[in-house]
Amino acid sequence: MGEPLNVAVVYHVWPHYRAAVMAAMDRSARVRYTFFGSSEWFRGIEPADVGAVRRFVRAPFAYHGRLMWQRAAVAVARDRRFDAIVYLGDPNFVSTWIGAAIARLRGVPVLFWAHGWLRREVGAKRMMRRAFYALADRMLVYAERGRALGIAAGHDPARITVVYNSLDVARADAIVAEIEGGGFAEHRPQALFAAPDRPLLICTARLTPLCRFDLLFEAAARLAGDGMPVNILLIGDGPSRAALEHQAKVRGLAVHFFGACYDERVLGPLTYHADLTVSPGKIGLTAIHSLMYGTPAITHGDLDTQMPEVEAIEPGVTGALFEAGDVASLAATIRDWLAAPRSRAAVRESARGAIHARWNPETQARIVEQVVLDTVAARRTRR
Image 1 (cartoon, rainbow, N blue to C red):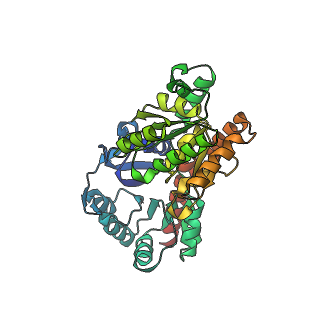
Image 2 (tube, rainbow, N blue to C red; image 1 turned 30 degrees about the vertical axis):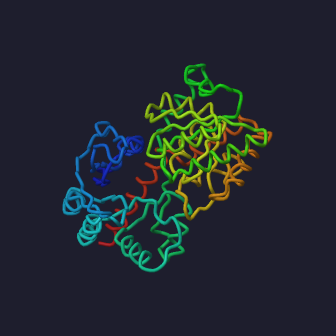
Image 3 (tube, rainbow, N blue to C red; image 1 turned 90 degrees about the vertical axis):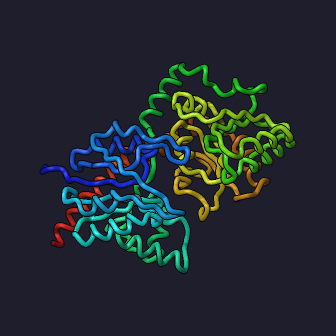
């Protein structure tokens, strides 16, 4: 094995939930990654501990309306140290357009790492995205549907690879082992409620209108009217909290507003002991977080308005999908799941198995590494 490749990975910010995949990539023996980006809080999101990787370069950025500029994104394209560059593939990042174009002119392979395609696009937006993605040798997308949509939009299937998404699965595994060994008894969420024997629905998210917790509360009121009252635990804070607290009080619902929490040794046990995660709006990484603690997840099934991580949910096995915006459908989906004669242990095993199979940092790092190696080799062969 020769010298490792030198590869720049350019993001605007590195949030805390990217720390595990950064660490997994940093362990590579064949690729020497240098991570560029901000290490500051951004829009209420905690940053990753960038000191945990061997090579990190602080690279500030600035937004001008919806457009972002980051000088380092252009600088790395001129830097002769790098054999390839991985950019966060956001077409609103003007500096990425310029940096990627410069790199391609210099013969340096460019990879875009992004959600990719979330829905079919038409008109100017489709043309803009097509032009942007054409700057990349390879696209790294989160999910199979994104790849399929890219192919349907006319992109070469050989240029699109699914890399999934992840959280810190190793840490979750250790917490689960400790829970199952009798630990964390003080964080059993049922103790937060006056009627602890009711089914417990949980969601960890910032409390905003997009989360549609108002829909969950309406569904909970229907369930109570049908003789199946539930407890609801919301972990997070945000602009919708006051309105949701009022709605819960008016409807007489058992809702505990836990507040914001970033401590996995608290979040893990609370999630593990819940019966269901319910995210009536987009689910995103909440799906991964729920499944890695063995808790099934329910969210809406309008895939054009969902996030890629919804693919981690296998309906009827690790969760279920309801009709977007439909209270009756949400209530029925929750009721049917809770009433079905499923083995909780079997569901937990399936949920965690899905994470260990694909949605984990080691899988991501392995796929990214291989695509980088293949792309650099292909470019060198063409010279």
